[in-house]
Image (spheres, rainbow, N blue to C red):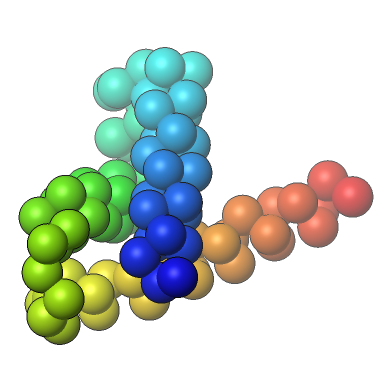
Length: 83
């Protein structure tokens, strides 16, 4: 179950990153420190997802999953402002 949730959220955050890059352009995307942070998390998550499919061991990159919580909290905060 954890594996499927990891893949799902990695896909969602990857899609968000790609939409932002297309919408803002690469230069403007990289001007924001939070976008760089998000990009690093997405790249590390993609690396972990594709490299550990056959391995059940604890990955060093799993600690970075916790950083997704900060990203979600940032997104929810902006959603609260819109509502």
